[in-house]
Image (tube, rainbow, N blue to C red; front, top):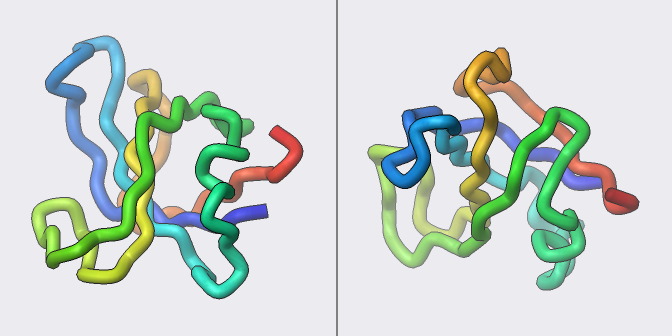
Length: 93
């Protein structure tokens, strides 16, 4: 399992039917390089993983610090997610 904490939520600029969620991966020492891909694009909460990256600089507008491994996801409006909420991806997804 992979634990994430949400750092930013905003309307998607590409698809108005979704919100763009940014989350930082917690406990990086337990993360494999291929793990974001192994998340298979969704969680139990109906999130669609768009991309993952490691920040090479501070990104304060989305709550990401240099060196953080973070994920951008789409979520349907009404998802009830909030900045600061922890969520979990299951490796078996």
